[in-house]
Image 1 (cartoon, one colour):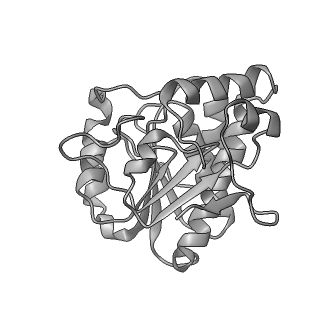
Image 2 (spheres, rainbow, N blue to C red; image 1 turned 90 degrees about the vertical axis):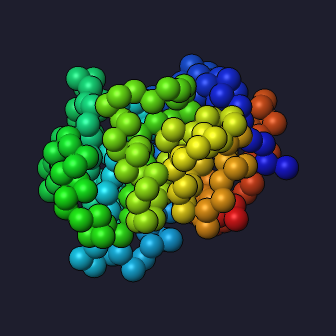
Length: 234
């Protein structure tokens, strides 16, 4: 059976990818973000070349980087992504990813949730949750409370990258509230919290795991069909 990783295992798998298998951060980020964009394009084809936009909410870490890459690929696929990025970093990698989005004419929204709400959320056909990844530990920092609250209460479908932001990586959603995504794209391997996912579409993305690593952690990853970079799990 496909293994669902706890937080420590997730961290160790990433560490092995970097140290033992010599993947770079930007290399994995590109593969992950592209996988997410492909999953979105496959699931929401009606949004392509339509007037409805896709809101990409990015956090300051690797999950946010995946979101920036996803936005760029969605633009190339004919979608209309817009980025909300309230806490940027001066790390060169993230600066370059954001620069690539801007050069692809992807709008960068004001760092103000009220401004986003005032744009009327029905203009967006999908929201991509790329705020927190598997290294997240509560509580949610003040900067992100407004956007998490917005995502908890919106009726716009949400696609979460790897884990729904604000969820415990192992235990799942908080006892009260919590984001309820329609779609989840698990990267490398699903995390334990994905067992609590009740949305319509659960994809596995990131077709880059070496067979040796799969065996070492007993991941039991399924075979991807053909040349696909994603696999629908439910």
